Image (cartoon, rainbow, N blue to C red):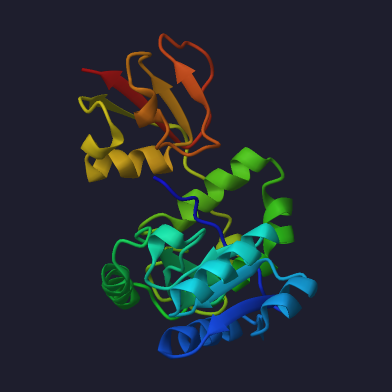
Length: 259
């Protein structure tokens, strides 16, 4: 991974968009759709405190001068179709407000990102955004139901997993979150899954192994397992080297053996 995906809040804030033509027009629409304030004057945008700039200038001398000025002012810059000149790239976004899924290729192929988004569009129900909103509204009630953070996370994991009462890939009624809380579903107890790692890099992991690493609440691992493999696990999942005889958390505990 060469870039760090971030969601940058631009609503109500100035964003510089320089240039004319289809590329500049597309970036203006993008900024406006996110609630940003488009500024077409370089110096004016800098004075207003802009932090992002899109530069769609065809003239190479003009482009070079604009980039130099913007970077001296500390702005992050995107140049459409010129990934080598970009401080950031814009992903293809699947929007189920407030859920957003951003698909990027580090500038390699915008077409590939678009078609991945279109495939995912067909998989995600229209109610996904409403589910996210309902979970946000129920945050206090969820904290009351499960005061301990670890228990709360495991309860949500059990509800949101495939086949769970809040499975995000299934259409839900507006009262689904309330019904889940009222039903008093308990989080799953400790479940141990053991796998043997033969890969030396993350690229060699199977899809199943990647899914387990991403879902595990704790990782118990052979010290011979490469660090690059452990890096694919959840950042908040404790790493416990073998041999380990201590207590284990509830939820999914993944035991990794090295081949």
